[in-house]
Structures are given as C-alpha cells and as structure tokens.
Image (cartoon, rainbow, N blue to C red; front, side, top):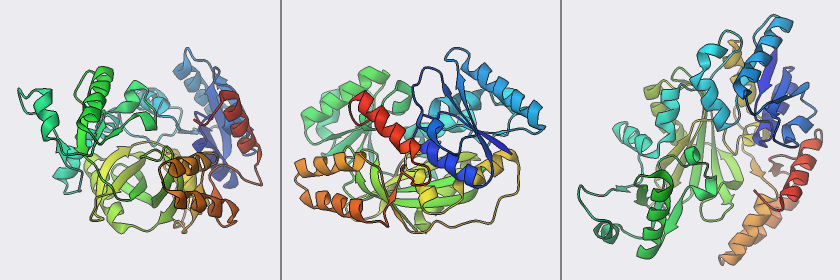
Length: 384
C-alpha cells in the first residue's frame, strides 16, 4: 500500500505522513522543485522524496502515479495537502482516477464551499445559523450603506485564497466607519466585487472537521480555539479537542446536501449569547489537522482507506487533548500582552511547561521535521 502526500512543505503534511507510516503505509512525499527544504521530506516516515517541476507539475505527478502502479500492481492513494494541488486534481480527476485512488471534492463542491456568500445562503436554507450579512441595496451609494452598517463588523472577500491572501489577510475587523470604508475599498480593489460585510461575533471560536465520501460523514473531530495569531482572529496557535454534537450535526447537513467528498473544516464563532454561527468552510486539509494525530483519532489512515477503496478501520474517537504550535503561540502571547490581556501570556507559559500539552509539529521519535521548520523560519526571517 502506497500513499502519495503532496505539498510536503506544509507542516500539516508531517502528521499525515507520520500517521500513515505508523499504519505500515509506504509514503511517497512530493513537492515542487522550487520550494526549498520541505519539512515533510525530513520525516522518518517518508520512504521516498520526489521533486516535481514547476512547469508541467500535473503531468509529472501523473507520471509518478503511473510509475508506482506499474511497479506495485496497485494504484497509490493520492492525498493532496495544498489547496492549489487539490483544485488541480479535482479539475483533472478523469486523468488521475485510472492510476490513483482519490477521495476529494468535485470542482463544483470546491467552488461552492470556498465561496463564503454561497455557504451562507446554503446554511440558511438548511437552518444552520450564520452571522447577519449586510448588503448594498440596488442603487444604494456606499456612504449610505456604510452609515447603516452596525459597528463593529467584519469585512472579508468571497474567496480570499483565490487571490493569494493568507489567513490573516482574508478579513478585517472594523470598529469605525472610516475603518469600514478602508477595508471595503481594499478588498473591492483586490477582487473587483463588493466584499462580504457581516456582524462582528465577539464569542469563542470552534471548528468541526469531517472526512466524508459522497455525502456520508465517516469521521469527525471538533476543536475549541484557545489562542490565535494574529490575536484578532488569525489561525489557531493553541486549540483543544472537544465534543460538540451540535456542530457535527450542522456540518453533516451541508455534507449530505452537497454530496461532498474529502476533508473539510467548518469554522464557527459564537455571538454574545454563546450560540455558534457558521463563518466559513475550508474544504481541504486544515491548519489544525495535526490535532487528529495528537488526539489519537484515525483521520489520516481513514482518508487513505477511502481513497484506496479499502475497508475503514474501527473508528478511534478523538481523546480530549490540548495542542500548541510554536513559535506561533509565543507570538500570540506577545500580541495578547500588547492588547492588554496579560492573562493569556501566563496561559502560554503554563502550556509550554505542561508535558500533557501536545506539540503540533515536534515529536521525539521524529525530530527532524521540527528542526527543518525552525531552520526555514530562521532563513525567512520571522514567523509565517
């Protein structure tokens, strides 16, 4: 049994590689030739590392699948980690299915779930709660629109990833009319369309992640975001696995309605009263994916099995566990301190010395990826 794990420079790829190797899967990690020192290549769980050319990337990946099929007599499971690779494989699935096993979304599913406005409309149709949206009326000028939007509010593009925006660049929290005007113009210039304007939700953030095929959900894991960097709504720097049947039920409604296949993370945030609202869906490997390994669940191997058309193992429910990313959590501590929240700084220090808190990348049995990550970080000159 062989799995091809793409985009090995992402730190999420490391937990995927480790889990598969622990299950006896032969792991081939691949990355574009232009990317230096992919952290996934450093893992002891990798059987073979393959560099693929920037030009002709898809053809080279197809040739790799054919090579493994010819050598082993069975199709490798192709597991795309990066969003761009996922989109390419989704678009060209007919070329790959004869030589590789896939469990990924269709182009239509990706387009729908990557569009925040479309997700909001679908969620409302299915009675899944979402934040209140504010839209310009026909013929309404911007000044009149800005005057009636309650503050604070959140402004975001329909699909920021399509324009190369990082997680921290895909939203603005606006507390003044001037800030709203600036954020609206900023995203409008990038996307050439009006951005989404939503109510600001001050409550806690949660995620519900799923593994599905043809609309059926086979695995779920929920997490509570404890800290983030940047501290005003950035990706998780510390999270913990939790049980939230309500969030799972919401996610399952949308998965069933869309016939979705693959991995996805449903992001929720709570209003002042504590009720969760669906913000967006990431239909791919998500940033806190290593929590699936830290909690002892079997997401990675189950994804492999669905792609390879193998029987699923007996489900291993996620155990309650806390996970941190360094140095992101240290950066978050400084951010909270600057924001006048010194208690969060002490929480970071407590988790740092707590042996029960899992590290999202470092592993005593496989230390090289963490060393590679920090080396790359140092060479880039800062946290990214």
